[in-house]
Image 1: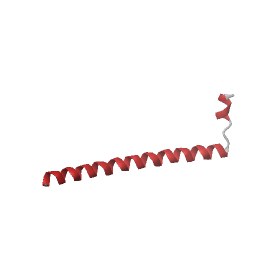
Image 2: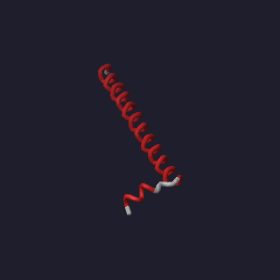
Image 3: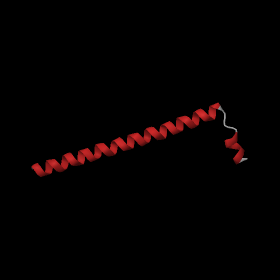
Image 4: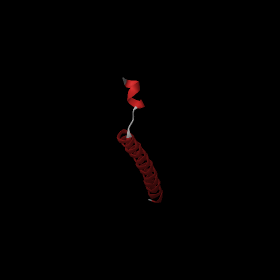
Length: 52
């Protein structure tokens, strides 16, 4: 039964799959931007410590 599940994907299932993939992609972009922001804040704090 399980192998036949993926063989009969209709338009509704394809739309759900596309939305899920889009959400994963957006999640990846958010995590990546947060990492960049965190590194920028760390660099700014290190610079502030040197100037103090």
